[in-house]
Amino acid sequence: MSEQELRRKLVALGKKAFEYGLLRGTWGNISARLNKDSMLITPSGFEKAALRPSDLLLMDLQGNVLRGRWKPSSEAPMHSLIYRAREDVKAVMHTHSYYATAMAVVGQEIPVLTSEFASAVGHRVPVTRYAVSGTWDLAEEVVRALGSGKAVLLRNHGVVAVGDSLEEAFQTALLVEDEARTFFLANSMGYAKPLGAEDVKELREAYLRNYGQEKRRLTLKL
Ligand SMILES: [Zn+2]
Image (cartoon, rainbow, N blue to C red):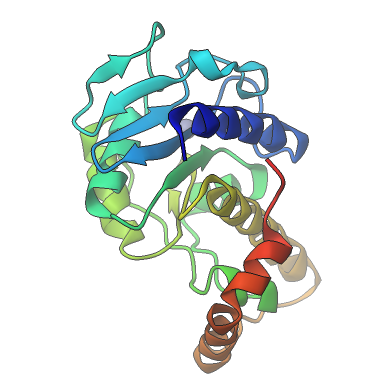
């Protein structure tokens, strides 16, 4: 994908995230891997619904701005370190979506409750230990807690979702928020009983077998 097309998609994703209520105000940030050693990332202090492709910054994965006129997102270290640790990751999305953030504040991991989550994410979402926003310390803690997974809760802060495309990172961020809301609602009515490990494994394997088809079904139009 060309840099221009990736810029256009990232900006479209920012708008979509507002429509879905995943991002508000100037909070949250989104990035996409351009190649092995660089990424495009949202600037600091911008409303993500109002971004233009030229507002995005091109950065290397050591924290240096290669091109762009604004200050990069303060969470650039976290995005960089995820790309350095995970070659399979092509996009990273960080949100403060309501229910998932509430769980991050409580320090409660999100268990796998629904078949949709088991299929498309396939693992519980752990909580990091607390670290200060925008630091390499937080970046290292996120990479550690994320492991080979697709999402993690940042203690007293929010959500990080990753994917092999911008669309997949977005889907995961959305599914994480929905699963956290389901956890809250189900617990208000009784006990939110997680799916068993075997059931999660079976659903995830079936999803991966039908990956192409499932992916088309879930993929957003950017
Ligand atoms: Zn944040």
